[in-house]
Image: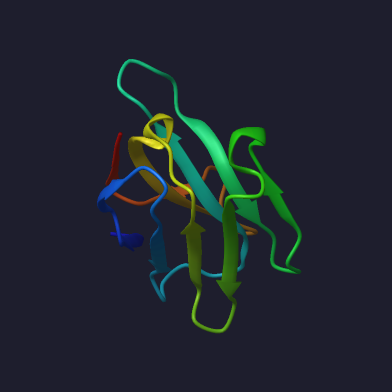
Length: 116
């Protein structure tokens, strides 16, 4: 499995969760890492991404509530989610983009459920 995610779960609205994703040592030249989410019956959407240099990008719906960070030495990316809303309920997928491969690497997905 190229990417291993952890940290999903059930939380009440207004609560916080932190997702983490570790890339396999066999993946070289990772430039961008980040997270997508997919709610039931909907398309997968970008939540946040971070480049090797630290440039971040967020979906409008999570700006000010979610923070993405990265440890380049360890090939780990984190997503700190605060003030969670029921609309944030989805399966969250980590992705990594390499300089040496066409197409992204994906994690298996982790469920985040926010109760009202």
